[in-house]
Image 1 (cartoon, rainbow, N blue to C red):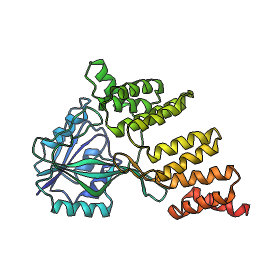
Image 2 (cartoon, rainbow, N blue to C red; image 1 turned 120 degrees about the horizontal axis):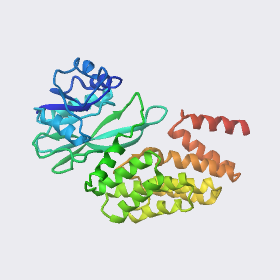
Image 3 (cartoon, helix red, strand yellow; image 1 turned 90 degrees about the vertical axis):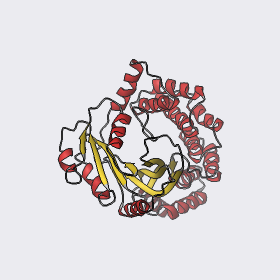
Image 4 (cartoon, helix red, strand yellow; image 1 turned 90 degrees about the horizontal axis):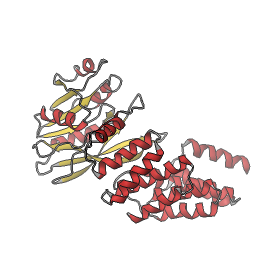
Length: 352
């Protein structure tokens, strides 16, 4: 079974070499579609492949990605962004998977690690469709925040793609695409509406974000994880607008699923900010008792580290020093080299 890497790029001279260097010995072919680079991206790519194609950018990520797919000859097609890399360990895992690709599998899903702690351990990850059978039945949809529908037989693999962008530039590209869709009266799916609300939040358009995400939730057609995240974005939007009903949206998440650890921690955070430490303790303890859910968007620190850290602080504010030390010691077991743990360690040593 052959495997093709298919990428779309534009002005990625600071990222593309790291990406391709991390995977160069894995694929049978590398397909690069350039959507209008003005820098040295193409010259760098030429060191890795001669299969470089130009694509006239039409504000549609799916069209560009599907064009890249159309140029590939592999039995399976894998996509990456220029600011993605594979660690040496994950590259070996992917190489092994390539040698054992199963023709009965339509889509292989790999982890996507996008946030990391001080020791570079992933703190935020989720699964994405990464390796797709080249059968013309699977292709990208949506102009922005594109995706391949999970149709057919799926396989979830313990292989991670690491998001590792060197330069972080704030771009309104995605927001402009959504605004163009509105102007052209394109029909918004529930997924489109959710991601439009996310873009509004990222650009600090909080009032409009709340309006769009409430419309999304009122339709009742969203994925559970998107519904919960929409409530969280509404919560933060209300906080930024300093409105009085911010807490309501966190409790709304209970309509969609059992309480999540992150939600319990955010409720605890709310009460901590208003100095209601007893209520904060209740919700941080609730987070500890809530089951771990790794479906959707998984943020590991909310499992134990964040509840322990904040229980330490809450009990200290209530002058319950022994309990504060107890939770500090639990934090140390999880992240002994965390800067905040080291700071608290020194603090407790000084007050003894």
